[in-house]
Length: 339
Ligand code: DAH
Image 1: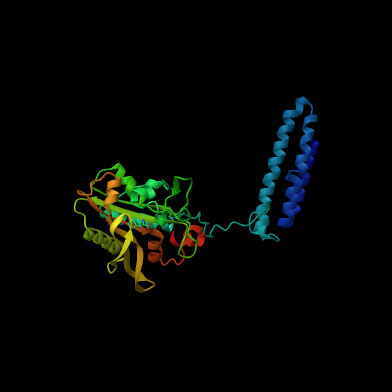
Image 2: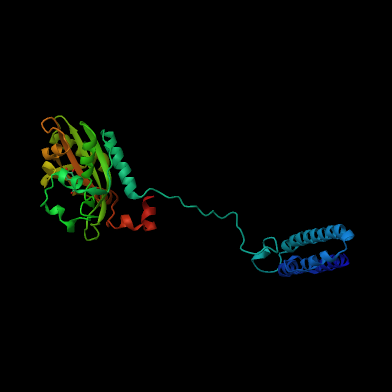
């Protein structure tokens, strides 16, 4: 207890004499620090006779809080007098680390955003929903029936070449087109129906600025009585107007797909970098009677149109994205641009 009293007197006297923030900090370390003089006295507590223990403990706490209070008071005067040196001088002396400037703008936690492809798909879903299309979905791992056979793609068709497909085993492959969902939807529902389906498709293409071995398609299918090519073109034109603007135009160029007859390639005239251009977006046509037969629809009663468009192509034109690979690289600068 005498030692405690001595420490108190001595330390307080030293504290009075402290000059500047550095010296003050040194005092704190010497006296109150984890290896300081006060701590050094604590082990001695166990040698105090039992009757005096409560008293000694009380004194220890008293000395400790007296020194801390004195230190806090002294800190204020040292700080107010401008202190001596270093970054701690402006803050309460004795604290270390950088100053906190509460007037600085905070660090934003950074909000995520939809990927531009997700956003494009949301927009497409909305445009087609307004025209009465609902959304259908199918698996990315498909069998040959849904990817080829039911779509009227014969055994010897070049599209079935193993080199043109990602086969998983002899019977299953990653789907090459969302047309598979036409078959799955018709197998599970009776006509009339009006659906779109969006999702990933896979082809072993050489990857470059306009090709990727995985990309996205939007498939459309409308089956009813007396559906005609006029309905197809009207639907595509309405879509183009809603999505690319009132001055967009649609052109259908004769083509061939096994699952449609007649078939066409769809072009949209839209603004690309300030000039109007014809851009091919995909294929379309009237559903081939063989496809109806494959799913058990009577081709004498029902007719329909279908289309399949590349979603990256649509997004690249709409947002002026020059390289398809940018969609998948997840470069934060690209993502942020569309967030
Ligand atoms: N599935 C075709 C492709 O990937 C695109 C397509 C063409 C889809 C005509 C259709 C269609 O539904 O009618 O190249």
